[in-house]
Image (cartoon, rainbow, N blue to C red; front, side, top):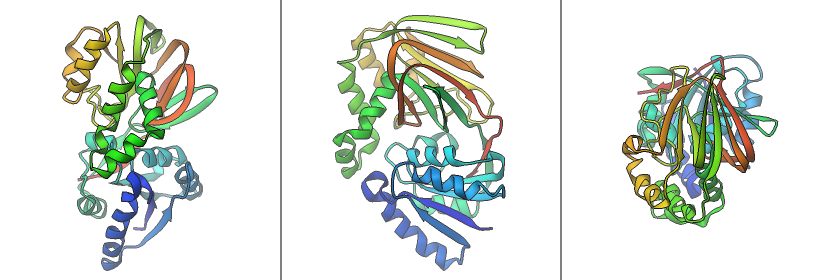
Length: 306
């Protein structure tokens, strides 16, 4: 078997490169048949993946990077049924690893790839907005959670916290800061085309394939990555002080029992706000729009797991 490694050396302020320098000697020692591609700019991983998978053959792709690099690879794959995905996490959030139970240690992650105990079938999400289609592995969302992702992408806070080994707190710190400036908006959602819900004061709507997003927020505890369903969380009609209190409880999934937190499950959903708001896919900023339409790809992706 030949492994194709896609490495983001700049992930987590250069940690991706450090981890690759630990992994590659082990590959050579074991005489593993592999090829490596290094990303050099935004969307490079997507372009490389599209080129690699354009031949219609079966491939084993291994991502060395963060959730954003996984997102680019997922967007670049031509046929999901012909790709097996391995992952060595180097990012600060690493939500992709949690639902799959993947190791965070690079040596254990490599062992999982070279000697996997199982292959997990994972749904791939699809979000349409502004005339464009994007795919996601973990989640997509519109409103407050997407605004936090947009700010995290350009904030120095993430760089500083990464240096202290506290990168997973980036989203919490920015969320607490951003909440004070947030003004909730009216929203409407359509679930599977036959159920409508309206909200007067909405902070955000997140559509989840995995139960976690934003560096460990356990937003949809019942989400299953391969059940052919999407799980949705809408936060609305809550005073800001209550949101502040609820955010920390979301790390344990305790937020779901409170009024103002609505959870749904569906195959397709449309979310419409009364004005353009930030939209994200796997924590990566993609647009500012009034409406998103979300569903699942027909093919699933196989992921190597312990």
